[in-house]
Length: 126
Image (cartoon, rainbow, N blue to C red; front, side):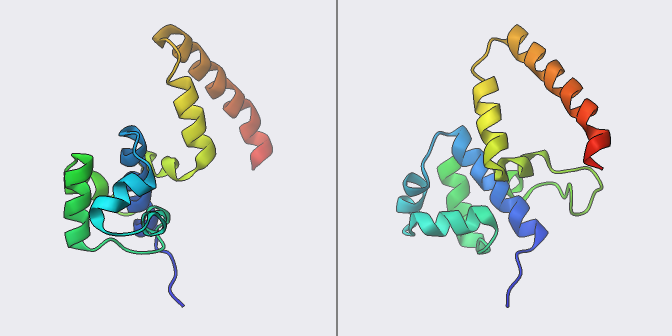
């Protein structure tokens, strides 16, 4: 039985992040590739690996470089977390999209409040 690998999940999360940033549905990305939206879901979840030819096509559609989707090794080769992997979490995406609607001053205030809340809860989470 094939296991989902950390790197496949990270690549999928970055793919999802760029797709959402461009406001594309999974279907809109799948159609020019000649695949179904379910296949895009599998790529984004790291269940199916992306072939090199598909990666090149995805990069063209998303207007990104392959290394932007492949990543720089954070969370795999480096100890720092891969921030784009957070886009794999629907709640994180929803939160970021909502906060992104705020003017910069309000966005900063919300961010500082959230940081304080998370730090207050951390001892309880352990």
